[in-house]
Length: 154
Image (cartoon, rainbow, N blue to C red; front, side):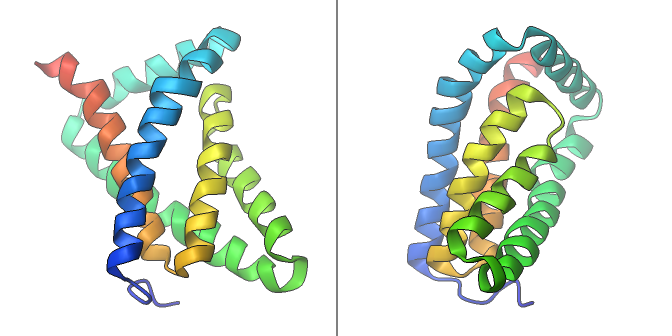
């Protein structure tokens, strides 16, 4: 596994576009709908946000660096990359997106994470670069983190 292989300007631009797309589509579009459908899940999510605010720098590193790196290596490189040969690309994409969604343990996040997992999987298939997926995932988490935390600390 070579984390820095297949990096291109186009891949980096796609990663940046995915980060912005995720924020607009999920945080500003689908998540408010899911929050209304699953109020207990939304309450649990808000409690998690409050716990993140207790140590914002540590949380920033966990949410925007560590989680994207670990999750992308596992879901895109290991699961999607490994299953593509034996199950086919479409099946591997769906399985990796479903497993990625299950990692989030919260219905609001799980439904959004499935959508995110599909797009990140397509990015991986298109670029053959797990680093681009890490950038997209980390960028999205950073945008979301700042949008949630900044108004609280201002």
